[in-house]
Length: 373
Ligand code: SF4
Ligand code: FES
Image 1 (tube, protein in one colour):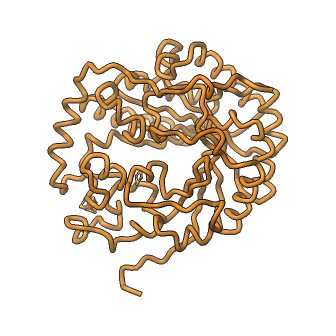
Image 2 (spheres, rainbow, N blue to C red):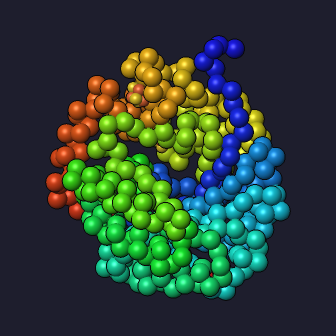
Image 3 (cartoon, rainbow, N blue to C red):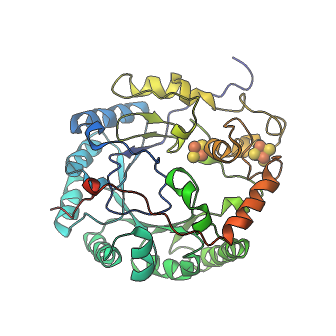
């Protein structure tokens, strides 16, 4: 073993993308431009087996996501199986597609936690961004039911140039709803979202103001609300430690069973991905080619290779290096040490004053789902 070969530990969390079907059409959707077809989705029994394999592998937290996971009519059954496997279950939802009856059934099935997305703090903003009339009203109703049932709640607010001014109200709403945590995530440009850099890129002033608001709110709301914050990285000097480091803490399973080191990994053309239908999950995690492609630090080029921060951020985000520089092995261009950093900042400045229109996620009509239950 080479001195830099990482010791591979079991993953802590698994994101199960149960379906790409979704009633919303958010322009910042980070799912791939080419969505998994409904008829390629894993069956109920296969998902249950994947959950058991995940628990055996050492996964503790299961995030049930999509698309909109409530679009799966077997969601309650899946939650039940995940709980039986000993996993902590978190439902990541827009709320659209959930009725009170269905939430109660999920509670009965053993769901531990709900993460509700927020597209805006007013009906006008939320419905415009989500591309779904009446979505905000319905979401507020769902939030009430979540509170009444007593699910621990995390609010997830995706912020960008058009709604960053609503950040203070989003924080207030989280407190009013009794949420324990809010994720303030400045839009990340992966998948479909790349088409909307001109429409959504925050200005540098907005990014700085958001930093200030979050710092102030963290001090003021200590003990009441935990604030997780993903800053506007195009305006930052150092990249984020994407996925906590490639193949180190988590894995994603796509609707069709492909096992991915991160949700945007399919944008890296030289990688090939194993499927849970063909190979055991543990084997994929420890020995799969995609998981080992960027584990640790051996793969790094300069300037990362000789940088003191290389085990802090692991060179940033591979998918961002691919999307912006065209080379997934390159230093994330967000980094000041990247030769592409200046160009990225110039791009960010240009995008932030662009009058490009919003391009909503294209959702074929047959993918639309109505509230069930
Ligand atoms: Fe991180 Fe690489 Fe930049 Fe160093 S050079 S701070 S390791 S991205
Ligand atoms: Fe793939 Fe960051 S999203 S490494």
